[in-house]
Length: 77
Length: 171
Image (cartoon, rainbow over all chains, first blue to last red; front, side, top):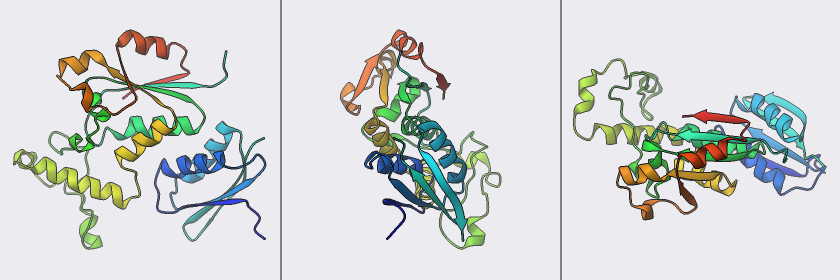
């Protein structure tokens, strides 16, 4: 069983597409569900922090492995 | 009073490179939950035309523009030809088209969206597009050449729109 409800592959996409796609994915989810995002845009690290701060969704984790950035976001109630 | 924050942008430039900032900032602000209005005036009106192929870029009198090949061997791709090529070269016919084709290729290679795509994303997010009626007449634009969903308005409407904005940008 996976520890997230939806997944978004934003690899190869550049600003602002990872944020726009994430916004769309979150809109389709229920409150409390989690979205895992994989991105390669280095700017997305700060941008997902800002996105969550501004939208009230919770950034559960943010990490990097071999040039890929992974984010876990929990949709706000 | 609604607690939705609001952004207004004035878009005044009509080249392919300068087409990006209003649509990138507008779509991102909308994704952050802001209400967005963009007022397109003078050359910025080009950004609302159905045919996005009118958007071009030129290295002429544009010394900040890097000129790198979007294909070929890595070593060759890393060379910035901008400062190496005399500016007079850009006067040669079709150089604009070549520079535009190369920039579109670079944009695609970098995973950056096309203008048509970003513009659609703005419209999906309900960004309001305001087209300057005076410039439409001044430049002799055909109103039918504009994408659906533009409001043709004057400066007073922009100021009414921006009077309760939290942030406003001039591009």
